[in-house]
Image (cartoon, rainbow, N blue to C red; front, side):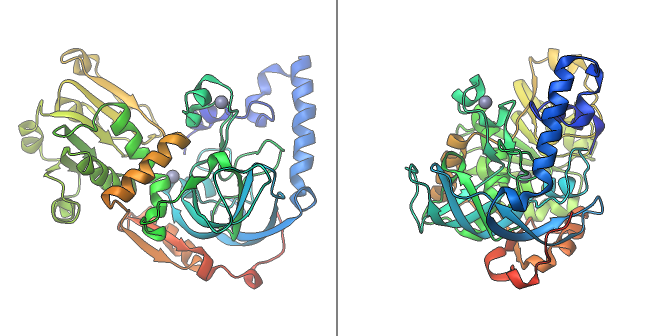
Length: 410
Ligand SMILES: [Zn+2]
Ligand SMILES: [Zn+2]
């Protein structure tokens, strides 16, 4: 998406730095050491087949076209704290689209996306405590973190400077992480979630990203109390779940959208209390000073001053999207009313488990269109046009066949 984002995220590659991030220190010993280490790791990652003996298959993008096609690769043996599971369903998140097209500038091909994964455990390591064979598990955006920094100790693994995402990142052993558009996965049990019994597997899968991304800021910023007046900006994959979460907390929910056609869906389908066409100045004016908080799910550049004006004193605007350019912000819009603009990114493992249990208790799922995996490229095209209500979920287990898969090539 942006060079600024890739610079930001470049800092998350602490040992095996992306080449772009290490150019300023060419002549230092540090650089030489890092360079050696980087090259060594590159050598390692060029032949994952020899790294890991367990054959796996899935769909991967091989270049910036983002076109997904079958791929054979390999995964590690089950370590003593690992669980191995067969993938049943995997949601398609909008960030999968950014990843396969290298919009963020750090994608290493081939890349297998997918971080809204539900599966059934097929093998557990000797020291696994949380799971047994046959359990249903979920895996979201994270499969690794340092486990010792202040963020990890505080169970905010998503803010660990060494966090490892489920696809397209480099794991501790130097190999690439492959996501859930694949037949099976293996992960440290710490990063696997216990799947609540009554939570549907297909419609529940998107909660592993869209659910926690909206649940976490509602909780952290104190918008989870009954009677709070909460705005939700954007009615897509994240936004529609945000409405459901906020309603389940007992909030009075206002949906902001630039598309008047979404009013009926918001009010009748999602049970939002109010709908505001954010292009309509009269409607925006009428909402001035009314909201305790706003969950803003929009990734495109958009004006935030009109949104800030709808907040009450001490109100909070929480950004979940990352527009490619800085947003315009007037200090006066914050100072006059002690308002806050904040951000939030997914959630830690403990909180994700709490969110899944909350969703199961309150009957919250995403609205999904379940597809076979060979439909995935069409689904990506439709996602780009926001032509889905509201999340695609791949029925991996019933549609991904090993015999369709080509041999590994990069
Ligand atoms: Zn996501
Ligand atoms: Zn950490």
